[in-house]
Image (cartoon, rainbow, N blue to C red; front, side):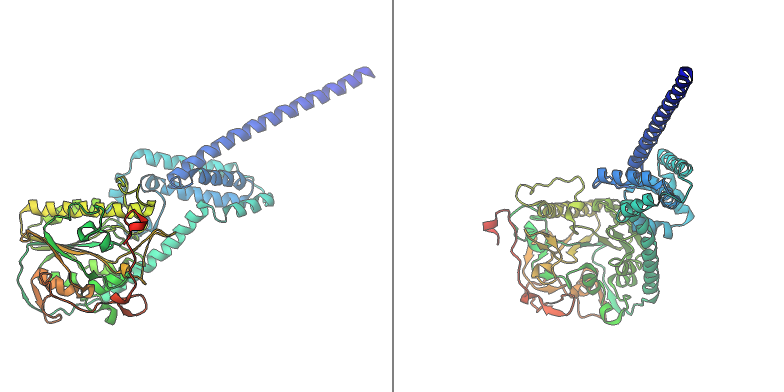
Length: 518
């Protein structure tokens, strides 16, 4: 009897030992797999560009999604679709960051030659990483629970995924494709339907090179060249040129303003054909359009249609203006190429400038005003320093080339700059939303002139006539910036109707000392 009990106890002990060993084995296996999930959570999150903001949280979310996702066929399928998309995008994401409409537009618009050039520019290591993620995807699929049970895990997976970045990434791709296709159709429709009716009487080309620089979100009274007490424009402060103090944008946003500035009658006819690019080209100028704004998007397509008339075009972004962070200075290489052209030419340069968020425009630039202001106001003023350097670089480039030249700069619209909770934003109800700089430098201008005249941006086609030496039947006699006795009542479009700009309230400027703000 004792022996039998001893035998039974022995079997129980062995079973217990085997069970404990099995538990240890599966625990070790679970730990090993969990470690693999964690490593790939870090890798995939980084490759997809989601480590810039909240990296720890984004890694943790993906890690939990992998743990929960393997417990059910449906959730495992969703995870694998995301991982394969990540594997496809990884080589690009490691260079450009999060997926966006610019990448989607590039894919949808590119041809085989362009695709080949793009792919050959990506390091081989990045493709190896992509293959590793793809291999992990197949390994994950094999490790899934093959049953349709685990509904509680599926429920947790769904709750976790509602606003998780992997889900946002997939939906962004789907909506991006739809939006890009819609904008491409709108672009083609506008492009194919635009017709110009310019009737040119004469052309007397005074300058061989004419450069039109279109700024973004620059408010005139924050430029020290116009009297701001802090040195935001050290070069412009003494640069030779004509500086108009009293130029107002046509509207408080890019499309509303430039559609009324660069075209003659688009807002009345819906036909953008009578624009300054078609005018210059019809007058015999070689035309260039160099842009750091987007080529497709709700706020970009119309400007791209105008730009499409140029002989040569360089867009740094294929999608919308906000799709990629690219420094305006990256345009200078194309500006130099255009300046070196031997033909009489007009070069249009469209900056991203001080567009909100201004801190995103600085890259590695210093912020000398940080001790005086909050972060965004400091960033805004620092973007004006970048503008000053950008214009100086173009001026020096054209001066060194030796041809007779003229350079004109204006901003598309102004901005509200304040110390409230949203310190930098559009301002349709304030005069500061329309207060913008207009300045001209040229090879035959040797002194610094500040002219106090009120001019509407709607007169820009007339100004363009004057600087290019073109005379048409479509426009009045050319409007000269040399006039210093001109005065007109300027009306601006506030998004609903035209209003007198001087009837709008002014916003005080910030000078770093709240009590001395003017």
